[in-house]
Length: 311
Image 1 (spheres, rainbow, N blue to C red):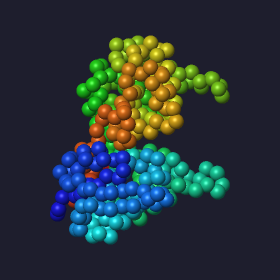
Image 2: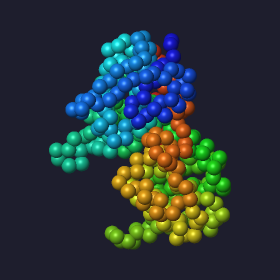
Image 3: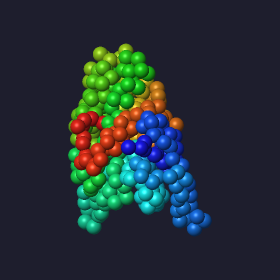
Image 4: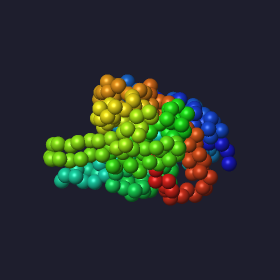
C-alpha cells in the first residue's frame, strides 16, 4: 500500500507537517481560499489517485471550517482517492448531547452523523464525552480512534516539573488525575468540597502539609473560560502551596479565559497542541500517527476501539 498523503486545512500546517513526519508519509499541497462573495475554492495540487488521504483540521470554532473540509474531502474523493480520513485533534459539538429543553436540537448527534457522511474515518484526541461512552453513541457511524493524552502529559510532567503533586479540582476529576499521576509516578490529591448551605461551599486541600515541598500540577482536559482552574489556584494559594503549573489538553481559552488564568498567578500554563496556541508544549502528533496507521491497516475499516478509558 502506498504511503498516506496528509493535507492541512487552513491553520493546521504545523500539525499536519508533524503528522506526516510521524507517519513517514507524504505532505500534500492544496489551495483553499474564499472567493470575494465568501464561497470556498479548493484545489488539490498533489495527485491523490489511489492514495489514502488524511485531512488535518482541528475543529475549534468549527462553523467556519466545515465547508472547506467538506469541499476538500469531496474533491479528493472525486479525484480518485482510495479513502479520505480526518484527523481532528480537537473535536467540537460534544456539549449538546441531550434535549435539555423542549424544541432543542441534539447537535452532538447531528454533527456526528454529518462528519460520518463527509469522511471515511476519524481520529481525535480526548473528546469531551458527557453522557455517552463512545463516539458511536454520539452519532458517528464510521471507524473512529480516540487518542488519549495522559501518557504525553505524564511524560512532560516527569521531564519538566520537580517533585510534582497532581491536583484535581473536584471528585469528577479523580479518574483523569489519578491516571496521569500513575503514569508520571507522582502523588495526587483531589480538592474536597463541603457544602454548608445553598451558597456556602468550603473547599479544603487534603494532606496539604504533606505536600508543601511539592510543585502542584493542576490538570484538566479543556481550558475554556478557565474559571475552574482560577478558583482552584486560589484555594491552593490560600492553603500555602507553592505556585501551580496548569496543564490542559485542549487550549480553547474562550473569551478572556487566558487573561483570567494568567492573572491568578500560576507558575506556568502548558497545553497540548490539539489547538494551536502560544501555550502549546506537549506534542501529540506521534500518538495520532499511531492511531492513523492502525485505521489504515484495517482494509475494510473497524468499529471504534476505546480500550483505555483515561484521557
